[in-house]
Every structure is written in C-alpha cells, then in structure tokens.
Length: 331
Image: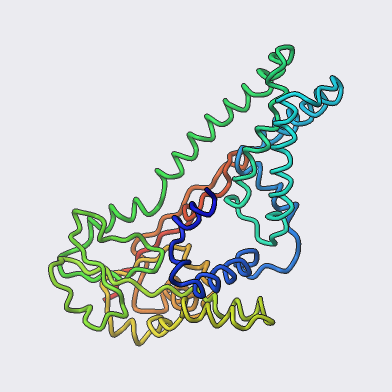
C-alpha cells in the first residue's frame, strides 16, 4: 500500500525520475536550514513548539499524564496489556520522529504537529483507571476552558486583520481607470467582485493594455533571495544554489527601482510588511524608501495587527500578523 500511495501522489517519478530525485535531494538538504540557520541541533526548539500547538496548560497536563501513565504501568507491573502496548508503540513512534526531525536547526510548528498525537495516545493507561477520573477532571477542565478562550482570540485576530480594512478603504477611494501597484504579499484585489479589477504581472510587456477591467492590479515580482542565501548556507554544495537560481530567480529586481516606478506611475501602491521576510536588498530598499516618503508617494492608509496577549496561544499564526500600508501619489 505504501508504494502504491507514493506513486499515486507522485506519479512523475515514473517518467521524470532524474528530475524527481534531484528535487527530492534538494528539499531534503535545504529544508532543515531553509532560512539560513546555523548548523546545529534543534531538539530543545522542537519541544518548545509543543505549547504552541496545545497551549502551555495543555502541555503541562500532558506531561503530568505521561508521567502518571508510566508510573501506573511500572507500579502495577501491567507489561503485557493492550494499554501498555499502546503506550510503548506511541512512545516509540514519537521518539523516532523526535530524533529525526528534532535534529533540524529550523523548527516550524508544522514540523512538530504530527508528533503530538502520539504523545496523547501514550497517556492511554491513565484513562483506563476509574480511580483517576477525578484527577483527569481537575487536569483537563481548566485546559478546555483555556482553549475556548484562546479560540475566541484566534477568531478576533482574523477579524482584526488590517488587510480587511484596506479592502474597504480601496473600494471607497479607487476610481475607474486607476492603477494599483501591489507588493507580492498584498491581497489580490482582483478577488473583490465589486472592484472589477484585472490582475497583471509587471513583467508582462503589454500590461498597460489590459482590457475588460475598470482597475488594473499590477503585481510586483517575488524576490525570494534564496539562490544567494543557499550559496552562503551550503558552500560545499554548489548545485543547490544553482538549482535555486533556476527555479527561484531574482531576475525581477529591475522592477524595484525609482525610474521604473516613475515609468509605471501607479495611482496607488499597496504593501504588506510580510514582504520584508524576503532577504532581497532591492525589495527592502524600495519599500523602506516608500515608507520614508522619499518617493513621490505618501502614506494614505496604514493599519497594523493588534498585539496578542502574552498568555494566549498560538503566539504566531502564519501570514497573519503584519502592517498594511497604502500609498497615494503626491501629485
């Protein structure tokens, strides 16, 4: 079943085996240090991610339950029972996963997430003891209440996304015939039905002739900077940097120049702070100068994500926290 599932999910290995293995090795090498992390073990960072998945109270309760589960098995000498077998099997899978994935210098919450259910399964012996029912209630009821409160804050954080307010602002201020220049991580304004906008890449030669739209959403090129980053991170594997340059070229850096901005002459420029996660110096200089109003544009709209209470989890939600800025031409 495993080979069949593999082929169903990655059928290209049959007719492009060389490309498959090249990309497989590429991702296997770069994933642990994708952002240029130092070459070190990340076991402690792996464990620190668990509270980000189930909350600090949940992590404490889990640690207590695991300890009790082990004590129950050892003290009662129930080594040949289904619950003990489940504990050993779940703990073995977690330990194997931890030893492999925890070695990554770069630890993302999504890397740790698959291992947490096995820790929960390992607490099985506790739930089979009726004498511990009251202890379970004392441990888990506060955790459930805490998670309910945190769920409310997660929903509120999405509702307070500054990009939502930016959509309303644009709908109120755009006029037919206007041109928007959007940073790579800005919302795709053409998705707003009321706007009647057409999305065009800035590299498209005839973008000025985009037909059938009241507004043109001109998208700036994505500059990952990963080719240079991987050359520095993996100096002994030159093919890694070469492959990154092939598939993630920064050839669009020409668009981030003042003379090109004057040539495009957009009515509005939109920028989301997550774009600064790119290591590209050209992108950083361009938007830093815009924010400093060194170009013939001024800030017309600015909104930022609300601060997160220190006791709430998750602390970070991918692509959510940030600052949305819209610039309008000074003339």
